[in-house]
Length: 433
Image (cartoon, rainbow, N blue to C red):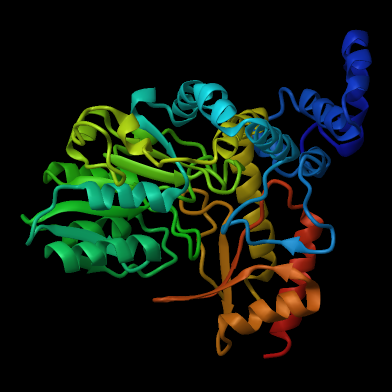
């Protein structure tokens, strides 16, 4: 890396002012070290910082991950950093001192500031953001809330998430809508191919297209904006499953040109488990029925009508604010570059092994942290079990439609030493074939 090395990185700590140095004694060691690392990283490009292990080591120390297990299934749900864990526990203690008082008179007052902060991160109007529990809840709110009728067509992919697929099938059974399926051949770095698969499925009866921004099975990023543009030309609404994209790589939700977007915040934002976000374009809110009934007009133009969840874990909800702070501390671009670097780090080392099959694009336009690898003649479960039994690496076997392999998902706390173990493990497995 040009003009930079580990020794010079750490030696820069001496540039702290005396005031900052004395103030740092009030903080735990991991926090002081992280502060120094962030200070030293000022002026470095995100691309250069992506491979600076000393910096990311201090990010790792913000988490409480087990040293006896290499967790490479962050695509399922990510651990939260210490600051988020502590906030959630603190708010939970408040709630148990006097639940009805602290929940509804104190913590609930933080929802509007939280809405503003989420909207700022998403790049949209706060009046377009509802806070809920996960992407499935957000997506199904739209799927069941849309005023579709018998014969209306919905275009979706066989690579979409099962909860989403099942929701559409329920509407098909209940309301007689027609589901039009596409089956993507992945991985692909051909944008025209990906867009055209959706366009070919559109008809005069198509009312909605469901697009998964980053496919959870293998990490394929789809060109949502171009698909949305083609859909809108034809008067078709666009629902985007952003479960894996929000706070994973750098974009703003309105830039996708989607009408509806939902995400789980406990994945790439590192918020507490059971937190999510729903975006609905302002002029579309009035057309969607809420999943849980509101006390007055269900077709009102208020995003808050989608938050009638009854008694809810407000200690979880309010700790989302700390996750936003942690994300912004790292920075979206830094995070994206590091995650893409980690995925390519291990994939480049195993892609030429005999009979290996790489199921994820290496190009940053089409993939980021999530990778998928398989072997000809071997079931995904065999490699998955080998990684856990022999190397204590936690990943997940994927056997879905035309994607067969083990999904490997590192995170910002993952080190290249962890991934070297993964490479050794995959190499050892290849020798058993």
